[in-house]
Image (cartoon, rainbow, N blue to C red; front, top):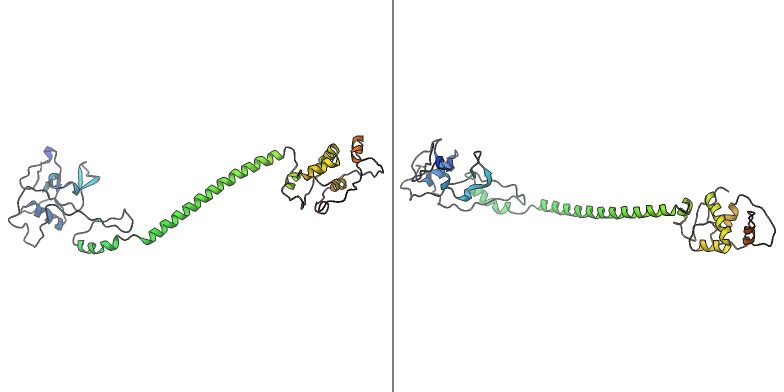
Length: 285
């Protein structure tokens, strides 16, 4: 099996060492050869073992297809147990790289953490000039982020208001169902009107119910119920809505006539209340 091409190194895969082939890129391959301190031209079978690369030259998470460590795209070997080279590896001018490379610089494009790139060979100087400009935050992205936060806060407020409205509608629905146990629909509608500006439309069922209440509690009791807000038509409206009207002349009071059980009611001699007869609409007369 193949072994390491570095001088004074006999590591191979047989002892569990991972080998890496020389890069195809001429510039990077030249850096590998110069740091190896060897005067040779690497072949497709030439390899360097993992001991010649610092830990920072390996990917932190990525793995090779074989399951071992994976070199970074711009990894350079720097760990060799040799002295200074007696002669250059190539006849063309080259720069001898230090044994310990400088820390890599990541170029940020605004605040997009995923948009990082590796500088290509020969473009290091151009990228260095753009570093200060690229590190500036993206103004448009900051504006969009601020607008998004405002919309999220507005949405949260609307959701909270919607929940409160649901609770309020639930309470009102239960209240209306409770009122329907002893009030008609026209009486429930009359509760939403002001006391002095009622324009209620009373149904025949409510008129009959009001007559029974009038006969049970008398005139004063009936007016007291209306005074405290119980939804009932005025006494004059009640007299006008009764289907059977018998004109009688008697000195008996309304309470005495009600006790007779004849279905007779004395005419109302009391003065009309303010806005009582004029503001109440009549149906079913």
